[in-house]
Amino acid sequence: MTGRTLIGASSPKGQQLEDQYFGTIKERILDYMCDVEREAYKLGIPLITRHNEVAPHQYEFAPVFEESNLAADHNQLLMNIMKKIAIRHGLICLLHEKPFAGINGSGKHLNWSLSDEKGNNLLHPGDTPEDNLFFLTMLVCVLRAIYRHADILRASVASSGNEHRLGANEAPPAIISVFLGGQLTKILETIEKGKKETIRRQDIFDLGLRRLPQFNRDVTDRNRTSPFAFTGNKFEFRALGSSQNISTPITFLNTIIADAIDSVRNEIEKEMKNKDFNTAVLTTIAKIIRETRDIRFEGNNYSQKWKKEAAKRGLPNEPSTAGALKALIKKANIELFKRQKVFSEEELFSRYKIWIETYNTSLEIEAQTLKEMVDANILPAGYAYQGRLARNLKELHSLIGSTTIQIEKEAVKDLEKHLADITHKIYYVRRNTHELEKILEESKKLEGEEKSKFFFKQLKPLMEHIRKHCDSLEQFVSDEHWTLPKYREMLFIG
Image (tube, rainbow, N blue to C red; front, side, top):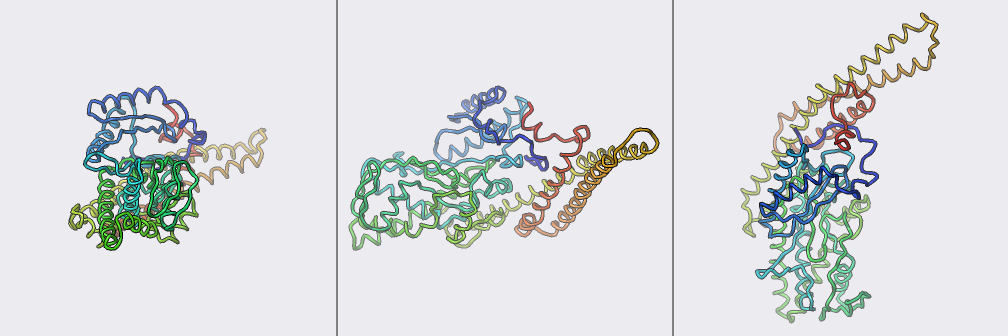
């Protein structure tokens, strides 16, 4: 009903051995993936890799680079193919961002670059110093776009499913930052200082404001924690959700970078009034490097230290979907999309309202599903096991003193304690489910953003609380009475 598990105690074995990640693809799954590739080939979708991922029964396809419009269409088609072919193999393809708690969820990496009308990659460092100058100009355009419009980029990946991933130790946080790698960072720092400096690295030397040397393509694709990382001749936006239509972040990214290119061009033209071209360009580049310093981060994006550091830098950190989507209707952002002739104010508001409504509806479905599972499965299973314990305890008491069997008092007390513990767990499941009913009733009076905020602050934490008690009950109730599949069965059997 929801694409994810709403309850389920963690399996004793999860992903801690990393045997799924480093093992071979299971034969049954390989047959499925080969069928997907054949169907994709028929539709002209160029898949280049298939491999295991970290979580049990988690796998990945990687398409070849294409022009963005075609890539977006192919991505949507591929998701549909994956679902349909899975059914033929007796499988279910889960594209939800967090189908199982306690193990890694799923996302997408959007590899993005920009080319001219001849197909030349504008983010390739090139083979000559002149190419380097052009490359660095394009690079600072990207930095300015992300620095000024991180809120728009965050909004482009906002959804109920992605709320479960962003900020966890498996996906970038809700803080947008840019990773460039050691080589590029050193070059930018040198330009920012505006003086010559010798950099001890092959093919990098005597970098001054009036002369740029040839330098190698940076291969520092090592920071897997960064939401927006430079990976040699492209950027990789790593915060997308696995079920997401990639056309939205592509559109938003193209828009903010186009606007940044306009602003950088205007600044270079102003500088050229009293400077030669190269000096005007380098002066503008140095200014933007200083301006955008706070958006660059080379460390661990998952760490608590980074959250504190990002707050000091004034970088936004919006964990909620409703809060992130608010960027779409900010006056300055509306003007930006209008200026670039991408969206009108009405088009932005319509998207904002639709995505907020989608978020609210998804959470309502999850909450109603959880309530039904509690009432129809969890509680009956708990009562059945509770009844068995009560009968056993009653029979045990009847045996004491009436037979020659010696029954230790501690054994009776232990059974009493176990019965009390089960009763306690059932009570808290029921009590919190009653609270869930009240919240759902109260939410009927709300709509739009107000309802989204209410769900984020009240409904989601309560659902997690109910889950905690249900999962605790699952670990004690016998398999005979527990009617729902368990994590160990779903993740490791079959």
